[in-house]
Length: 112
Picture (cartoon, rainbow, N blue to C red):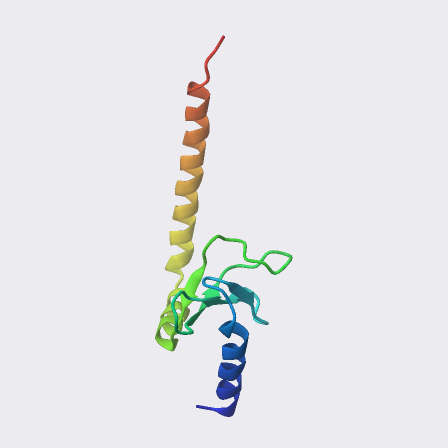
């Protein structure tokens, strides 16, 4: 373990040791948060959650990383050009569902 990693680990233990379960703390990396996992032992995960203008998470839940293997798999998946098409399809499906919900909402109106 490098000296830098050892220093970060000690700082992490000090910072998150008193944190409550599921408590999030911002890091200096935009969009990356420390999260204290439940249980008697100190367990911490990293969460990627796109930050808003104030630096706070914009989503209820983000992507959790706790080891280098998971991070590497994400790094390989995200630059894949097929991800753009997949995200566009998910957005289109969400828009279609939202439009359907609005249209259905009008049918449920009781006319007097």
